[in-house]
Length: 258
Image (cartoon, rainbow, N blue to C red; front, side):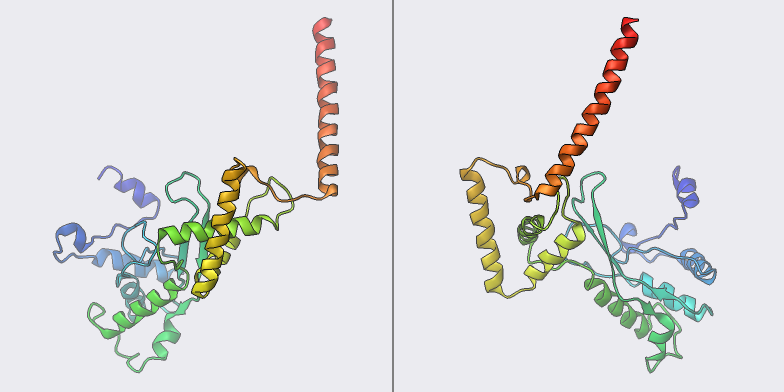
């Protein structure tokens, strides 16, 4: 109750979920009304269609709220409503200031989607109509295209590690890091490859780890090879820095002596 005014100032709209009321029916008429008004004003409404947050790899059951809001807005005379599926992948979901990758899927134009359905003129009773279920399934399919697909957490960790090792060879300086987008893209490509190809990658990663252990090295101690031009630029930059710092030090000593 105390934070409700602050949430309202941030533009958040409270949702009453049946799960929070022991499965009892809930009334979200005010929520849908505010959502329709926002869409009528050409605003943007962010929804987490799974209804909660979780740490599982796979997409959870998509609730019907997003479809009901979009169809209800159409029924209320709002045109041009578009659903944009977005998948969020965190580098480390528990770490503060973790990198996050946002994958944007193919949008769903509600006007066109309804026009392609035989019952486009019957969008009434949005709580029960088959159109709600069909649109929810379409949202689920589009979201699944933006969601990582791995067998389990271990496979995801190992394939991301393998992708990171491979992509570091393409970097041009030791202080660079592999972009999350490139790493996830390569790891997912390996996950979608035939089983024999995945086994080859896993074997190569295991060999690499054994070599690190034999040399008593850590993976983060290794950097990509750099060319002479890079080393020359770094040497010149460090020399210039030392020269400027030396002038400041000499001036400081002189001032203090006076």
